[in-house]
Amino acid sequence: MTHPSPPPARRPRTGILAGAPVTQAIVIVTVACWLVGRIPGAEPGRLLGFSPLLSAAEPWRALTVMVVHADMLHLLFNMVGVLLFGSFVERSLGHARFLAVYLLSGLGGSAAVLLLAAPYEPGWFSLHVGASGALFGLLGVVLTPTRSLDRNWGGAAVFLVLNVIYSAVSPGISWESHTGGVVVGFALGCAALLPRRGGQHPTRDRAVTVWFWAAAGVLLATMIVAVLPGLRASALMTG
Image (tube, rainbow, N blue to C red; front, side):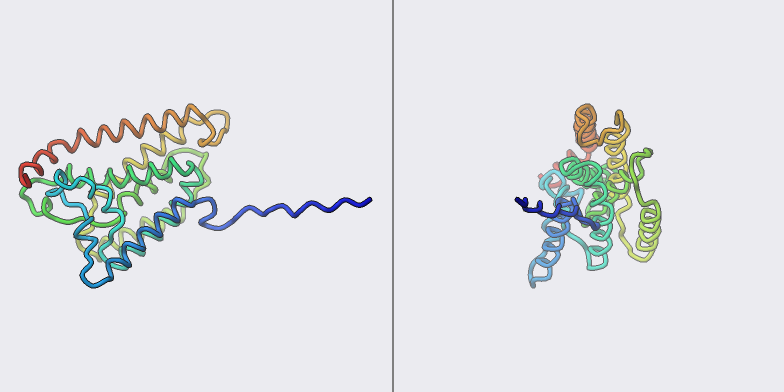
């Protein structure tokens, strides 16, 4: 009596987007927002971009700024970076922690813009757009000083060089959001990757999970406290 042969085992998915559904969703939503902006009369940048002046009256802009971009080159640069670094970070940290890093880094970028803007100065009234803060947060994770990440240093170096070139040829680059994003991302990367024990993957280590979310909560609270003066100034000017 012959037994049927077992079905062939599924090959694991390979490629830059393998195991990174959140990264894919972020890119799809961001590109969709860009396409909406091409409709005559649609102005997602004006409605969703972040401005220190409107930070108290419309606080959601601190997050929605991540899905709107100034032009095609801006969108392309950021989304290529998200695909390269986001998929890597998502596989390293897990889906939930990756999303937390992305959102908190973007929020950190907006917080830095508000913190460093002086009321009544031109920067106070400027409109910021783009996912640069979130993207630099992913780069901050890649820069975490640990040997547990099999990272592509060459890709990170090329990205930094291209960013310097792009910043040099494009006026109005928000260095504040870049700085805020990379600081938050680096801090969360350290929280997720440095306390690992016994070679466990960070998504399976309960102590690391608790440490990461505690660090995320502390960072969020710190950002809120840091921007309170700016929020008060915004409320006075728009109220």
